[in-house]
Image (cartoon, rainbow, N blue to C red; front, side, top):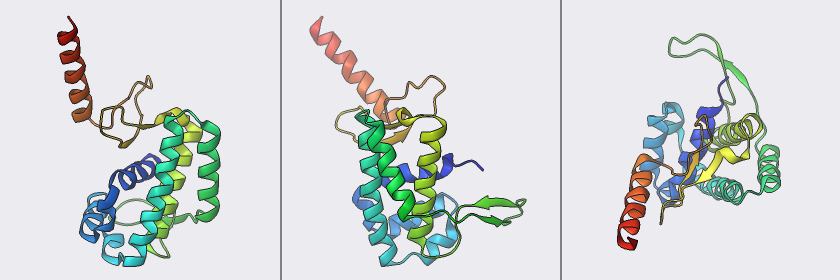
Length: 175
């Protein structure tokens, strides 16, 4: 079971910001990530719960960016207790049997379990330093560093390009 896609869901939830409160935006995200059933069942209670989760997950990324490994682990352990994992065997869309973390309950519960378990998996397999916050000004988006040399510093190519152009212009002005 590859939990990286679940960790990427956590990143997407954090980066949605206030758009998370918009049911149309959240449904679009769920559909884009192959969670069409969840998108159809989404309720206002789910959105409220996901906004709380987003804030908690943002705290995990902030602690990781500060290099506070102990706080990251404490936050994730607290989330794991509040959102226990219930694995289920699933076979859908012509795929062979495979594991899903949860299928029952509210949409917010399933997304919380997946997001938290995905981040916990990344932290335990790859390290806390694989969670980051974009270093481009003024962007503060979260990201997962899945590079082989742990060199990622930006959330997207757009932010990397913008930061590189700004640094180049600053060097030119100083020369």
